[in-house]
Image (cartoon, rainbow, N blue to C red; front, side):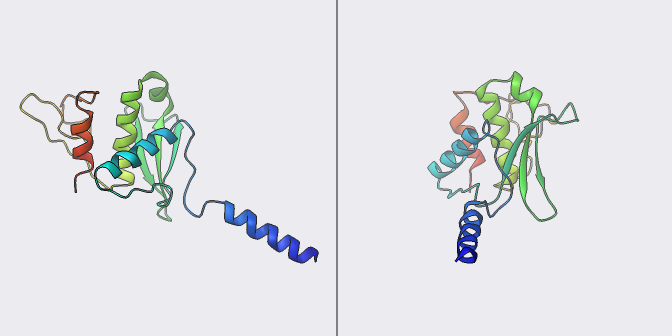
Length: 151
């Protein structure tokens, strides 16, 4: 009888653990959920958890890097956001960088350094190296998200 009880407990406990990848930092979770929502509003069926994509806020040694998408040898992906950036910036700036990194990790998008005639970045996926001005704010958010989730 005890063997069956132990077996049952092992099955229950293992069914509660994640099958994929990594955990998501509690501070990043709302941004991950908003990414899924915004994608669904544009015709994408996004399930970050099912893809095993995790997210962490920690100090990144390279001072010029505020976020990155890393892939493990097993193929699991994780978003890293620099802690100093996270503490210093507002919600819109946080959303921008999390969405940019999920653009890499989930959508598998590369950098897009397209600029308009006013030297404004056309894509949330800009690398930061083209010299274009980031214009992501409440008035431009929808256009940037439409471009991010283009099919």
